[in-house]
Length: 227
Image (tube, rainbow, N blue to C red; front, side, top):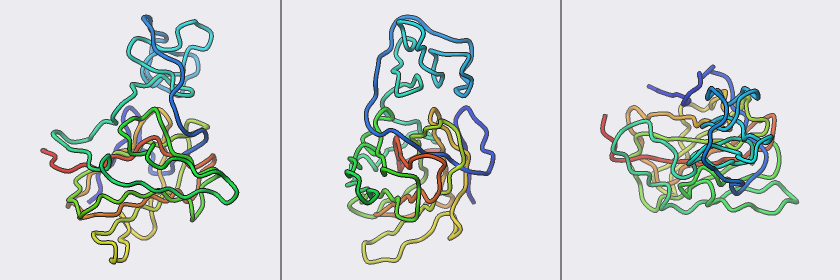
């Protein structure tokens, strides 16, 4: 059984658009807030959580928020879909592919517990655009939060998610060998619960197809959750 959701948005059952710029947050919050909604995709509002940064104002984002490329976000750990969880991905060793001819990006930026940094493949998604983390030993995973980095900020992306409990084991596809096609957003994460939980040491995400560059803000893998 697969349970998925996107915070503050509707999962349309089709695609994710991962994209563009990698790396670090920019700008900063201040004392005032901007627009009147938190739709993210509405360019007429700005300054609040998941809204565009207010480029026409000296204050890009409201208090406690950071202008991360285009959107006002709360930098730091991504949210978990269950309570009491421990994100074991942060202690893992991350590696990421690089498109031929491009400088490899820092794969740790996708498991550093900060949604305002990101790893970038260096090109559009393809069968080689993979990011993975070695957790060191098999962990019982109950849920995942995956936050893409996307430019444009909304779109459809095809993902192949795989895991294995030991280095010598073959990869297991999640949820199936056909992969996932989802609608995703730069300003909201995608979350899924593993029901039943899965045992994984190595966890891999391949961004197979995107309308923009393949990139990830953060991948969090959770254990020890309570209902």
